Image (cartoon, rainbow, N blue to C red; front, side, top):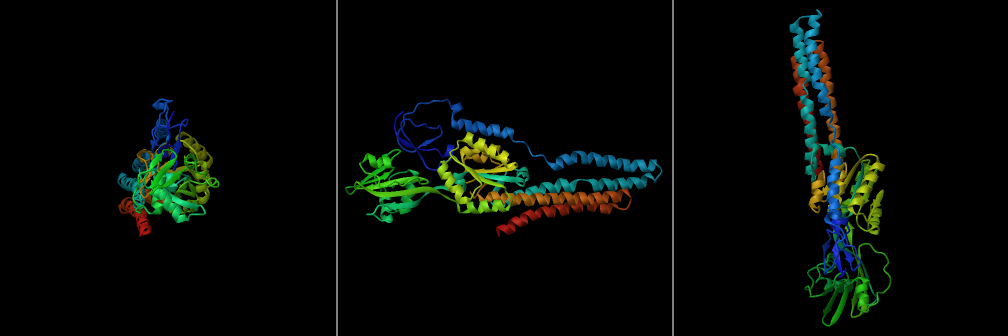
Length: 463
């Protein structure tokens, strides 16, 4: 209803640049006011706010998430009673049919039972999964269960959030455009002189570009949602958007056109001095993460962001992503995710860090949250946490999951193969109890050592 200010909406939309609001603007519950006083009218109760809907979406997504079916559990349900019945039949039927004595066939039945003990499967398969979780933890990836590894091994699509995930979530001056009477360095120092007195994220980025320790922070006059004004040694400096300069009778020279991030115009003593572009920047590992995922055969690598579509598109093109969408609130983000997952036709991993990502992290087949920058709600909803805030961890987790799956099936095939062979030998009286013990304890030990290779591979990679 009245007032002007800048709002930090990153927890709701992922928008990296604070949003300027004035009379008539819509303000989302959960935004953080960075400046002036606002008079607002509440339009909806708490249960209908964007923040509340996001929390409700997390709960609904958790309920829809189906548990992973475990091969060993279903297999053991039929395996154990079957071998007990077969052992009983082996001990009783042949003697009753006159094919030998009860002592001989009882011994064969005991050999059969020892061989059929599923120790190798019951021990080695969980150990392989624990080994995979340990290997992931050595890379700074915490997984909340072995079923996450099973899911990751089937990943066909990976979707990322933008701000704080593919980008650093920290502003930096990326472009400097001075007027003819001023150098680039002079423009930065002039803007920084005014911005050092402000706590606005964009102001801090400009002060850092000029050297945060150069000069004291002087008292400034802040215009919420517009910028700042500093009078120093009788010299007036304005730094903010075009509207601030025009209010003080300064004409903005030239049209900078669309620029990513925030454009800060600067004026000194009533003359237009130029403009700076302040924006979020890509993580160095982001490009490598995308390339590694493609090498792993992931068919779709994309991005879903609450940031402005122009900003999201710029970063998506730099990374060469298959698809991207911007300007999404949590509900819209979740709808887009579900549509893309259906189109991809396979297991989908989502990586994010904000409160607005929590519903997707809960709904995804597998979800990873950033451990350092991530919101508590995102970490709680995720299946795994990337402690190093490195998107490359998504590719590394898939590599570990696939290696773990390969070793799990090696153990299963090895155990069933050896046991099956010795079972047949025991039934025909060829195998003794020594072969039976090897088929049980020996196979379990070898399968366990095979599972330990996962940790060794992780250690050598780190080294």
